[in-house]
Image (cartoon, rainbow, N blue to C red; front, top):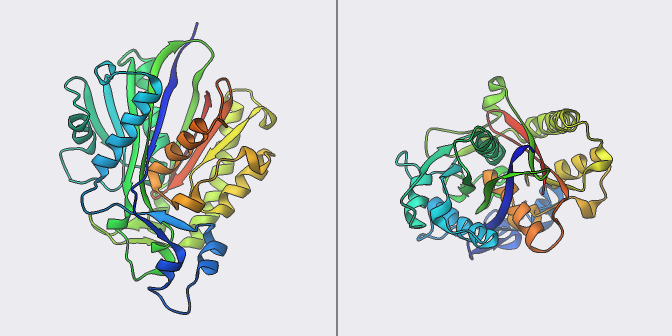
Length: 315
């Protein structure tokens, strides 16, 4: 039998503070409205971290929910990998801060930076470690507090992002279920179209350029994942995409020939939570019963770097 990394548990956490489009639009005057934001992004609201919340605290809450969902104790976890572009400190890593918050005194922890593609990158690293026998159980977390690196006078970017965290517990098991393959890419020539200046912001984005690259590169990585597993588009039950923009999400759903109800969408309520968006969306669809055991799930994301990637998972 083949040793695979099975998603044993999923968890998501959003800060309780919600900022809707009307409240945000009021900051900009007549040129901005709920309709203006929705038309361009599909977003109606976003969650923002409070002064007592951090990248680590959000990630720890998501991790606790993933452990509870898996029926797992923290002392069985061999390591924590955190994908984030908004760590609380240059060092120590967010992962070891989460380790402490969970009361975990064994194993390892480190952060990984690949912007909005971070969770897919982290999932790939964790999967490789499990397949290589370096770990039997790993927490993979995407956690972001983008509200702290945004220019709140730039309506072209600040309306698009929110804060939150998502986590999965990966467990080594033999069988057909688990991560089938992951596919990672980067092209630094396009690094300047989506970046954070310095270490604390603000975020800058050339939206039209990002959109153009997103559709092309995500389409290619979807085809790559399917071809690697000799699987047709018709075999995919669920698409869990990075929640950046409703237009990109709908374009990817159409490419796979999936009906809208088979594409997990949270961007309307969560906005773009960067590396947290895929695990947040996955956790929601698992906990509300849409994604069932045995379903074939395609994850994909694109972010600053440019980075992009995909993962095919038999849930």
